[in-house]
Image 1 (cartoon, one colour):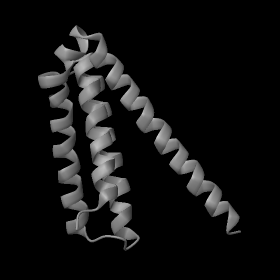
Image 2 (image 1 turned 90 degrees about the horizontal axis):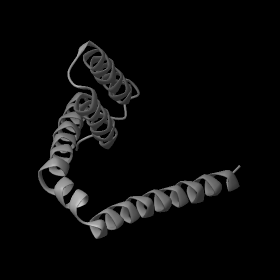
Image 3 (image 1 turned 45 degrees about the horizontal axis):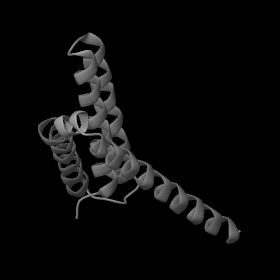
Image 4 (image 1 turned 30 degrees about the vertical axis):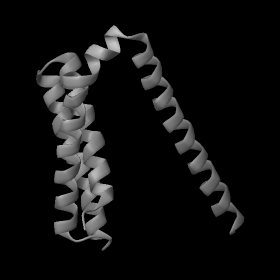
Length: 121
């Protein structure tokens, strides 16, 4: 039911805004970038409606879920993981290796499907 596109767009946008505010503080620049980021996310999500891929309800629910998941994921780092990350080398190694593994698997997936799409021409 929810738009996974809207969910992922708002997850990434809200996470980037929260990270920016955490690192630079709340000021005119971060507020401006945040508003522009949310406006751009809204526009990209609205495109799903205008192209008749989703209904308004699906996009709104996706945006809400993406925002909530982003806030929870962002806060969970500071509530649970950061202290262990700073205290233990093995936690840093696991987190970095896990992130690199996910990125490599995603890259291989994209390349595989990109090459498969090229074979259909």
